[in-house]
Structures are given as structure tokens and as C-alpha cells.
Image (cartoon, rainbow, N blue to C red; front, top):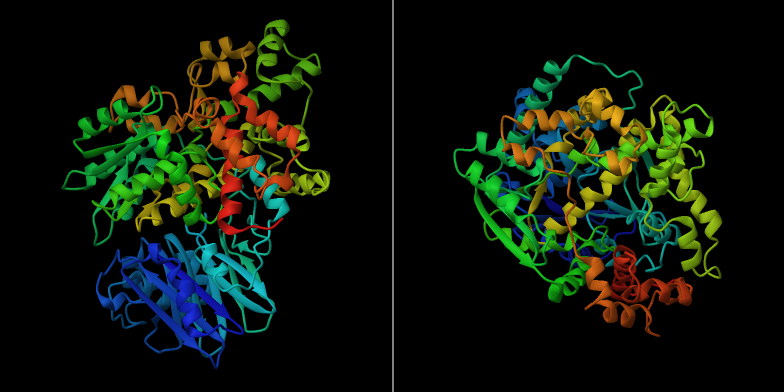
Length: 639
């Protein structure tokens, strides 16, 4: 895994390109290279983190044998050895790198080479004969790629800081991106928090020639399968297990030490257990948590580590260093952090770099197999709310209404999408309207665009029931944010994060399965008991989440780990902002020098910050505002 950068058009001086490239040295401390062609107005830069073929033969940018193609590549192609065999007789390979395999595949298949690649990647290939640039990103967005177009000049990089270093884009806040962040803690689609800097969408590529409009094309999308096939539980169990084992094995490849994050939850425990089956040596595993009671999972991680006999290490964090590290983490991500546990992942990556250079992580399992139990089961709530409003519910109406009113402010019938967004949003419309400075935002029109992004995806799901819709939306939208978190916080310490659950073959197969293999009732009796309960009262009590993973895990990990309820990585934000960190937040956000002060209604901001005088849980809301201010300060963002 590496850092890539490039410019097509009126390219800067070579030393400026080198300087921009080296802003991402943490992504590739082992080597660096540059291709610079003033006549053709193209330059490609590369920072190398050596994982496969550690020799200098893997130096990039890399040229094809013919000299026609040159590539700058970030990522890993897990099936490169098989592709290399398939290309025997077509291409004379000089190295053992997956980089050279990509070039050979492009030389043979052109853009269609993408359908053969299994892995995570972002790369650019320059065709020196046709004077054409090909830039692409993997199917699910595991590897990042940003770009901008200024005066017909095309700039791209693995990180936004690479583009910013060219000084061609003003550091201005993207209003819609800001509102997206308040709602979902990340920006939707191709946009970023920076005005006029974009993210290449997963499963897309760009083709362009100097001075021409770029052509952005989709080559893959998360499948929408209206008629799910049920091959039977025995077949499903074997297929998912086989796919996952093969994926884990391929993700363990490399010429450097490999390890794994181990939280003690189902997903990471299963990955580590499969790694242990494959490896001849004990797997190096790592856990992190907070000293506060209830804010670490060390005892569960220890239980798994002991059972599987891993080489295990723990790291303890506290509030004294959390916010200093948060500021540092923002400087690597170039954006406000999306989840509080990005700080622990950043710290953990620093620690584990002393022992390994590749770490496997469980991102994607919850989205793919139905792990967000309360959110996904809330689809059952909306179905019953509609029955209540039509007088068609055939149970104890009063009991159901009493329980639903504990969960929802209103029992009006709304669309599946509106229900999903109401549950998924961190700052709902009314809260945003109160907080945001109406002199700066046309909130109604901007928020409408925000919803329209989901509408476009949801329009393809008309035949899905609510829960299947919610699964698809989380895979399509939420997962990208998690993958970016992992990439930025591991690469900050020159560690390659790999995500076996996000292998596209596994994703495609699991997407074809009926919902019962992901979430199902524990029994007919449990379903009957749940009839008048809300989703919070049902989830992981009367139903089973990630059903197929739990069944597979019986071969690998202890029963008590399999049966644990889902616990998100806990960070004690509420206690911090009600106590030791409340003054810090107020000093930062209410200062006359605060860059974000023009965004907010001061009275509403003060109400949110006064959580030390209330019992409400506003920790995550304050944390988000602190993130925005720290980011705006660090990057001198103008509004």
C-alpha cells in the first residue's frame, strides 16, 4: 500500500510535485519515485510502503516492458499470482510485484482489466502513445482517491493534502458537505468538506486526455437482487465459510509481518481464528480501550487470545491525551473524524507498527450480515406502525403503542427511507435548523439535496422490505465512511489495513441471500413475544443478528463470544463533556477566534455545550462540533 499523486495539464515544476508527493510520506516511507514529462504535460508521483517484493524492482512509477504504459498504484491485488499465470505467453514479467500484473492486464484488456482484479486499489495509468490517463478506485472504496479540476488541469492524490499542496484550490468550506457531516459524520457521494475537491466514487474510473473533459464511468455496483435465491442452509454455510477462509488466506499474503485487531467481538474473533488455522505461527493481535469502567473489551479479547493462542497486546487510553491525539489524527485524514474510535485506531496503529506492517480488521461484517440489530429491526417497527394506522394490527394495540412511544417521538406512517434517515441521522432536521446560522445557509434546499442522494439509491429498492432496504443503504453509504477511517488511521503509521469481509465476491454472494441468513427470530415463541415490543426491546433478545456468521463461528471461537451482544467501540464522551472536557469544548467553540462561529446560532450552540448542567447525552454532538473547529483551524478553512 502506498501514496499516489499526479497532474495532467499545465504541470507544476518538478520540485513542487515532489514536495506534494512527500506530504504523504507516512503512506510510503520505504521509497519514492516520480515520472515527469513536460512535453506531454503529465506527472505521476509515488510513495512506497513495501509489502510484496521488497526489492527495488518494485519501485514506482513503474513502466511496462514496451515502455508505452506507466503506473502509480496504491493497494493490493490478492489474485495477482493467478493472473500472472493466465498472462503467461502474453507478457514477459521482470518482477514479482502485483503492480506489474496490473500493467500487463491493462495492456491486454484496457479498462476491462478491472473485472479481473480482486483486491483493494487506487491507481493511475498513463498511455504514452494515446496520451490518455486512466484513473480508478476499487469496487467498494477501500482505498481513497481525491481529485480536482482547475482551468482544465486535472490533479489527483491518495490524500487531500497532496492536492492542497499545489495551492490551486482555495481552502473553502463545502456547505453541503458540512451539513452531510452533521447528519451522518461523513460527506455523501463524490463531495468532501473542501469546496471543489472530490472523491472518486467506489467502482468508478476516469478517462481523460489533456485539456479535455474527463469521462467518469461506473464499472461495478453493489448488486440489487430482487429475487433472493435460497440454496439451503447447509449450502450457504459451506459457501460463506469457504469464501471467507479463502479471502482471509489471500489477505495474509505479503513479505512482511501480518497481524489483526482483536476486540473480542464476533467479527474480529472469527477473523483471528481463521488466521490461526492458516498460519503456522501464533497470530499477533492487538486491543485498545479506555481505563474507565465499561469502556474497554479487554476481558473478551483476552478470552479469545487465550483460546486461539495468539501473541496478544493491549493499550490503554485516557482523556488526558485523547484530544491531543484527535487533533493529530485530523491532520492525517484531512477531514473531521467520523467516529470517536478513530483516535484509538490511530494510536493502536502506532503501537503495532513496531511488530507488524499489515493488520486485518473486521469492517464490513455488520453491514453485510446484519449486525446493527436495533437499526435493522426498526424496519419491523415501521411495518407495525402502518398496520396500527390502518387499524389492521391483530394484537394488543395499547401495549404496542406504549412500547413504540418509548422509541419514537411520533407514530405517524412515513416512508421506509424517511424512517431510516430519522434513525440514522445524528443532527435531525429540527436540531440542525436551530443550530445553523440561517444568514449563511439556505438549509431547506441544501438538506433536500442531502435526502435526494439517498432517494436515488432507494429508488432501485422498491421490491425490498424495509430491513433489506436498510441493509443495502448501510452497505452502499455507511461502509465507505468506515473504510476511509481505517485507511487513514492505519496509513498514518505506515500500516496497511486489510478488510476480508469486504471482498467483492463475498459481498456479491451474501447480497443474493434471503434475510433469514442475516437476521432471524430465535424461535416462533420469541416472534410471538416480540409482537408488541419495539426494536430496542427485540434486538439480540428475541432475534439473532449475523446468523450465518454465528453458525460458522461455532467451529472457531468460544460460545460466550459468539453469543455476546454487539458493542460498538465505546468512548466515554458523555462523561468527559459533562466533566473534565466541558470547559475545553466551550473555550474552543465559543472563542471569538473560532473559525466555525459563523456557522452557528450562538444560543443553540451554548445550549448544546451546557450538557454539564443537564442529564442529556450530547457527547457525540459536541464531539462532532469540536472536530469541525479543530479541522477548520488546522487547515485555515474559510466559510
